[in-house]
Image (cartoon, rainbow, N blue to C red; front, side, top):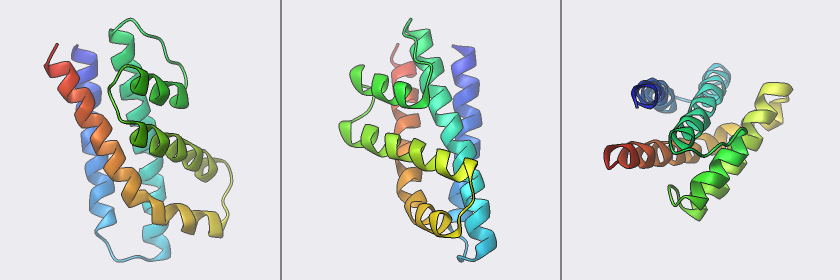
Length: 131
């Protein structure tokens, strides 16, 4: 339980950095910094799902697999799994190749992704607290 609690705290802190940059006036530098923060927040959120499921005796070893498992276990909504899968796809696009038009498109989606990440973390916190 200590591992999941620490990871949730780390993820909440990371999400706070994403939230703060989303409040900034857009520029190329803000866009790129936002995408960087989006990448590490996305990684942390799926790791939270992985560790949570492991604590329940369920293995999920990929980001998409962990989002799908979270739906199967009733942790998140179908809407959030769809957003989560799209978020993973976009995170992979941003980390492997840089294209200005892709960066701009993904930057526009990040506020919605942020809200999904908050819902996922809150769902895990609630599930852990009610064990």
